[in-house]
Image (cartoon, rainbow, N blue to C red; front, side, top):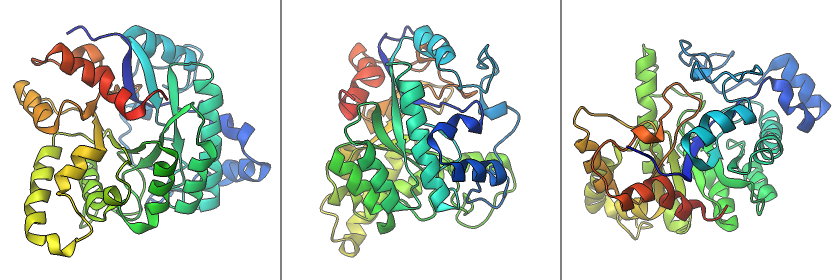
Length: 355
């Protein structure tokens, strides 16, 4: 398949060359704190995530910039290897840098502010096809709302960024100030898979294998979406746009069917829901494409697109990660030109507008 030009890529990961990259926007207190203690996250491993180490930084082996540094740490190399090479006309940055879920909330607030400056002034100012995400210290919802309002109106930012593994389910009222601020300023909320909640990825304990951990992230996303619907977030803020990033999406149709089935029986418990759960999801929620399940019969994927809606799924490359999706090798099943345009361009234009 030949992908169109001017593609909107909804998940690009920029990385630091070193923690010192953030120092221009940190006070001396936090520079010294970062050097002495690092970023202690909500995880049983004080040194950080147990992410699989076979691929350094989870990155492509060919994505190291020629000038040195980690994969995804060079604006100029990303421009050549991703934007120019694949016809990307517009892309959203989603930094997965230790700042959200940091135990010391004041440190988290400072890191998020610095990362937002770094994105805007290094990446977006350096490449006009890119847009940043407002990284917020979501375990302090009031500080997160303040960060959203601080950047409101800055066209360099396309969305608010949360991670799926929050300390409480994301529909919990403690996080409502975040959604209120996002709805107030008219900016979508993206929830990216992963994060450090301090809790196991399963509902009953820590898994034995990395493979279980990896598969569990889609389950976390399903639990999070269910929470957002049932707690009434989309009823309270009907214009809020939610994007589930790197969470998968083939699970979504069956979840919507199951939610509607149980709502018909238990709706007296949730009188604040005036619509069926699937109606909120169809109105308020979009998904990015990577990672995409790949059955041997690719026509099954076409069925999922149809059941979920061709207007709900947006292309994402996940650059520079090892499971990067080449836009020319994503829609390998029958699709109309109109459907392809919606997937690669139109849906993201509708969600993010002219940001």
